[in-house]
Length: 386
Image 1: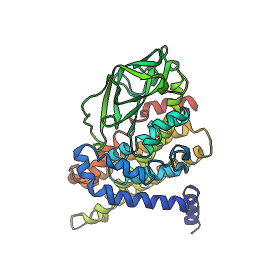
Image 2: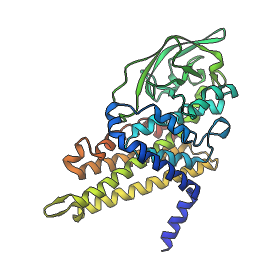
Image 3: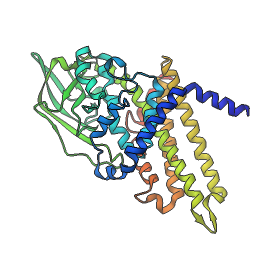
Image 4: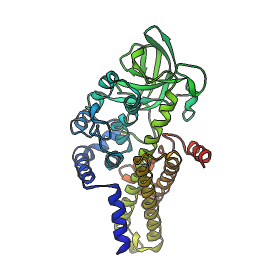
């Protein structure tokens, strides 16, 4: 009994009654508006743009953002709840697409002027515009300091040339928070510009087809002498690299959450299936080898989730958790790798079939250890901070 009470107390340290009310509201919306349609949206490769407006009106897009820019404030666990419940749609692509503002807006909120926030933040939080983040380039992903897209000052504007790729929400984005090279080589020559999609010379290639995350539109974006107003510069010129590094921490936390929920859902599906599926005259759960596999899966999911919550709590308290969030991301992704793999194995041939959630979870999971900094980059960060 003492261990149960301790566990409940630990949970209460992370989530309050107000958190529970938020979770219930988001969960109800996802169940009513998203889950019944998600299979069709996966096949279509996108979800209706109207959902941005709906989520904006309900205040969901503003969760975690300051009230002065149209947000609903709250703490880090509000954003975790939003991400967890969007993932409960069963589609990582939907969660990533609707949530792309979560990585596109923080640099503007952190470093932008009041005028920039009025133009580029408030309409996105209201669901009237779609925002994407443009960092990755065709010639390099995790090597952020080697960005090649150039922005040359020309009077009251920057002339931008280059390209970005693997941009979530990039096909439909109205604006791109874009990392560009305004100075010399290396990290000290990078800046952020907001580039609007109707800028002459801005073009979007055909929608990229992915292994997973089908419901999110993903694009390669090209800049051909795009003339971007200098007033769209976010923060100081040549200081963008540090903003990117700040932004990565919250992105990595949300990827931890996505990995944990992916694993949790795979575990839940496996638990249900092994009770219903019979072999040799008894349910799969009647075999010790199955029960032990499920026990191992459940243990790993529990540990990973608790580690993520603990690191999030420390970030909320203002503690430096660069090393720990890198550890948490690698751990959560490795657990999700194993649990989704084992869930498919327990389903047998059905786990390889479209129409079964574990099949999609297995595919969607693969990007998590790549996005926001690869496993290898996380290990480099950890090793340098040990």
